[in-house]
Every structure is written in structure tokens, then in C-alpha cells.
Amino acid sequence: MSIKSKLGSLVITGVIVMSIVFWYVLKEPYSTELVVDSLWDKFEVQSTSVGDTLPIISIDVFDKNDIPKVEKYLKSKLSKEDLEHYRIEVFSLWS
Image (cartoon, rainbow, N blue to C red; front, side, top):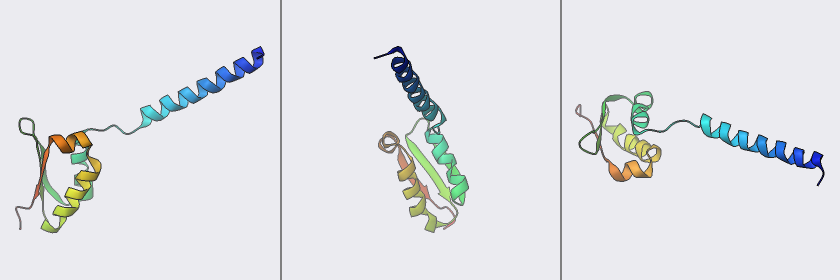
């Protein structure tokens, strides 16, 4: 291999590595609290709570018909580890 092709390979490899790092850094951060807080934008929620001492995620919705939708949303957005760690309680005090 000539010096030009070695240099070209090095540049292409550098561009690929930088692209992967850039993509990884821009990836949206994940946390249990961010997922639970996102419920406020998607549903009519009265209160949310992520337990510190007890592993419970509590969600109070205004409309009891939203309960299955909120549960489905949380199950699709929370990590597998969170779903195993926390018990999810969605309820409506208004019903």
C-alpha cells in the first residue's frame, strides 16, 4: 500500500469513528424521571411519583379511561431494568 492509500484509509476511519461518537453523544438521555415526566405532555395527569424508598411509580390520572394508555406508554418507554425494579400503579382518584 502506498502512503496515499494508508492516509486515505486513516481519514475514512477517523470520519467513521467521529460520526459514531457524534451520534452517541446526541442520543437522547434516558432516566426513569424523564420518562415519567413526559406523561405530563402526553396525558391529563394529576400527579406523578417515582419512589425513593419503595420501588413504586405512582401516576394519578384525571380520566380512568387513560389508565390502560398510560400503563402501555410506560411499558414501552421504561427500560427493562426499570420495569423489573419498579411496580407501576396508575389510578384515578376522580373516578
